[in-house]
Image (cartoon, rainbow, N blue to C red; front, side, top):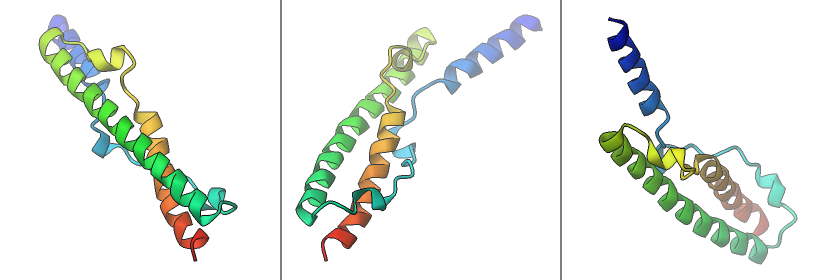
Length: 110
């Protein structure tokens, strides 16, 4: 009974540490006021850069989630997360910055 319990706990711990898909990561809270001093052109340029960063991080995060799923299936380890491929924190921050810049455009580009 103890072996079965230990195995179940170990499996749950492994699955809990797997990387999430990019679509399930909520954006961090970022205020549009941080960008109020920018010109319209600067705001649009920064938004373009942040969207590119978001796309790159989305690909990395989805690759980490896929790597974790494959790793857990074959070797019972979330390989992507173990080797630092999980970029969920960075992705949440960039998603929040994109949202804030989109709101700032309405203020800065009147």
